[in-house]
Length: 148
Image (cartoon, rainbow, N blue to C red):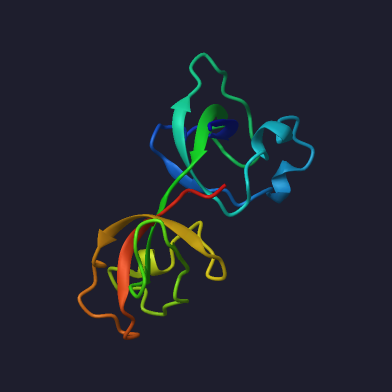
């Protein structure tokens, strides 16, 4: 189900994904707070529609102002332990990885996913993009269901 919110004009394009980080200090006293701060902190969202005919509103955080958009929670691609991994099962991330140059790093530490929570696997995508895991982890690349 879509939620209408306000985001920076530079992000206001269908297909744009972002992780909502919550209220910033500059939001204090803003007349549009209730329209901006209506998402769940730490959740990844995708812009599904930009409200046409909506005006651009001034914002202390976004230099180009903000626009009304519709967003929905987005699925997250992640590497999870391969043992017992199948569509519909639950999995959690293995833990932090210091190898930031690894082609799998963005999937081992994806934005919008916590290490201490379990997520339902929506789809198995296959092998991770790395050839060798430097932490000797056996991983599968999956798509986790969108957060609530």
